[in-house]
Length: 79
Image 1 (cartoon, helix red, strand yellow):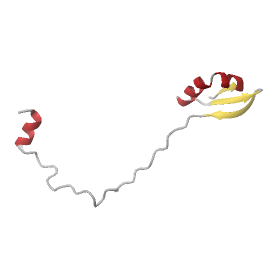
Image 2: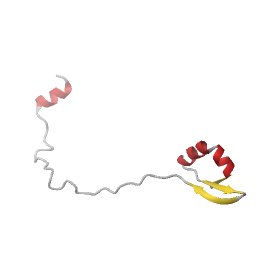
Image 3: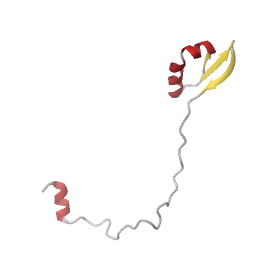
Image 4: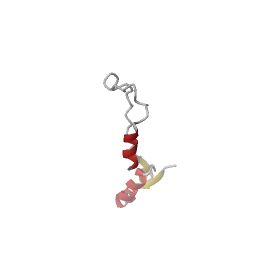
């Protein structure tokens, strides 16, 4: 449900109203009881991900999932 406020109150409390709208509220601004404008939050657009963008540019070695040599494991474990 939207909150209806008059123009004078909107001018007086604009910062608070904008904070409420940014948090997801919707506010209707009215003049002499007649609705004139709606303030609603702006949500950033989400860019669609393009799959396969690096196809043919990255090569995964055949031994990618092979166990690491003992000396590499030891360097991670601080031995």
